Length: 412
Image 1 (cartoon, rainbow, N blue to C red):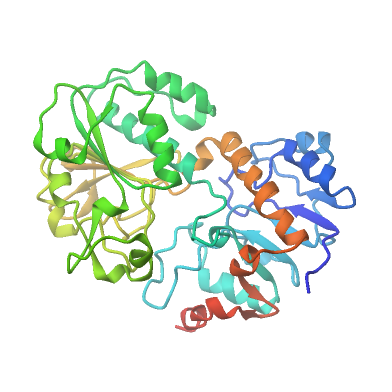
Image 2: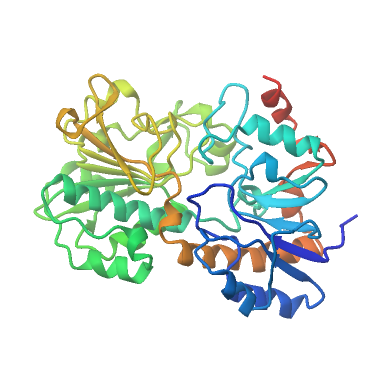
């Protein structure tokens, strides 16, 4: 039986550098128009991209006390000391990929112990609904920050290229904090001749493509990328069907790849040998093949810059030996010793910020909030078509059957 929702809360984020919000102020009035009997309470926060007064203007109440709220929305994982027992929470827990063999592959809040988080959620009998698993029947996600991860990740990677090649770098995205302005900045840059490889075909990749359209970097076919030389900068986009192949050369089927990723291997080697830059904008599961191996990296003599938007440490991009911060987005790798070094001793520069959408918090929060208003709240308050149940990881002190494998993880 669906619990009646009388009050919705927007929590203060546990991560001190997280400025995004799950719902923007203007969306408060949209919710209240549709559900006039519901109260909306916003915990005050100085780090949030929207001011407390903006929420107040659109009908929310501002209060530290959210104990009366039935449904609590956040962005990232919640500090275990802030979790309120017997509540329904919706946030990115970064736990569903975890098992006893992949203890740290899920991207999330640095320093936050996923085992401790899950155990606390179970002990406090919290219902945890994870944004990442709110999906349509075909597996497509209804909402996410991926588009703006791609936007900022591409911008940062191109900016890294400028700084590494003695060009004047552009202003940082988080200092501009305006999507249209960063596109305008890029449109004024004339990039020199290079080859850029991009992998992906989802939301993140869409953001990358949007940014590249603002530049003089021209898209070419995968065949031309491999075989031709150009007098201007070009990029090639490999979708999932292009960058993996079945080990027995069977015809590619996305559904089969998702269900049986271990039967596939990467086919990016020849492309990376031709690339000066690489941007990873694909979805990755720990069971999927890595894009390249540590041993192969030394063979990519032209490759000088990687923008790892996926940012899974020791994940699909082995050169991502750590995640970076908005303030210090890049690190330098000596590919011979495979260790971090200074710029002078490196032969690879890596951008691996783990919370890229936070550099454009107002734009990304507004887009994300639209998804919550249209694709989440109506199915929690009204009739669920399966998307909420499928994304509910815990309830009443237990994992739902779909997520029972996490018992092995928290006890490993």
